[in-house]
Length: 206
Image 1 (cartoon, rainbow, N blue to C red):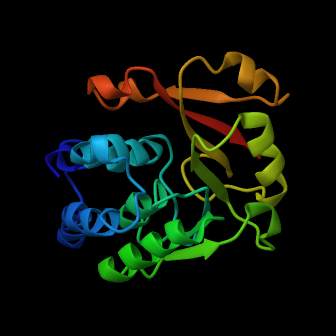
Image 2: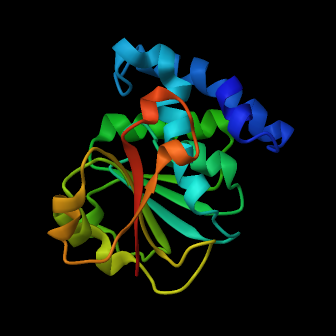
């Protein structure tokens, strides 16, 4: 929890309460459904919560913004982002029912009314969104094919509407294969922990 306050010192008491509750909530769910690797669960705040919040250092979402988390797993990055941006609306989509059950349980316990878990394949969603977020679910060309026509044009935050994707390593070739223009934000510019040394937020505007 200290990590969150280190980089987001101005959060409200309600946000502090929700962030602080995440460890016990995920510990209880993880004992039933393994959605966070047990070998690094003690690093939940570093490797999952704070990593998710790197997106918030790149783009702050406006009230009313609609954000889709594709392949959300147990709720990363959508759960931490929904806590941080209570006036924005998040849809957490995953095709694996047991993972969505975890997101539903966590959201209910936290009272996150701005987060809607959906057990579905993203290709079947009828809605359109302002931003799509995700954390290393597949190669970028395939990912873009899934989501690009579900993003509206406009600006509903500090960046134009588009994709914000958490990924690590050397991305040049993979991004080039999309035929799109990407902006790469190095997470060590925001967070100084060694874990983030090679991690990035990649962004493409619609």
